[in-house]
Amino acid sequence: MYPPTKLSRVVDGIRYDVTEATLLAGDNYWADGSNTRYGRNTFLYRTRKGRYFTVTLTQWENERNTLEPVSLARAIELYERQLTEHVVSFEEAFPDVPVEDA
Image (cartoon, rainbow, N blue to C red; front, side):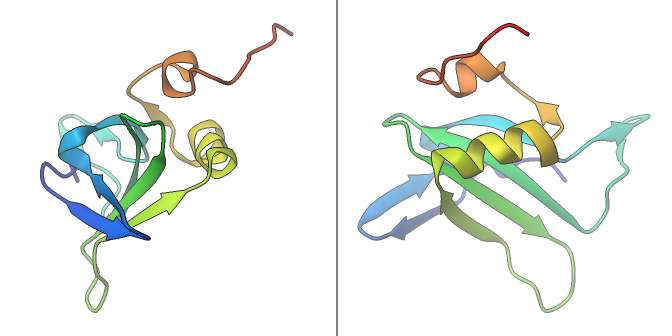
């Protein structure tokens, strides 16, 4: 599945909108131009004001697409572990988080 081009939701008085946010990463991947992960994909976004949220798209019966705000800590965890297809670098995704060299 490709990231959504239109999806928004208001949570606790805050509007999260994929058209106004930066796509950071996803767990979608392709081999020979076709999606090899069929069924459910998650995408991580950052808003202009520095809030993070995920969008999960599903093709499974009786499931709905979701948009959920996540904390900075959860966003970093998703970026580093689960969402392996990075659209931007760690430094761009989390500009206020210091990175140390090993």
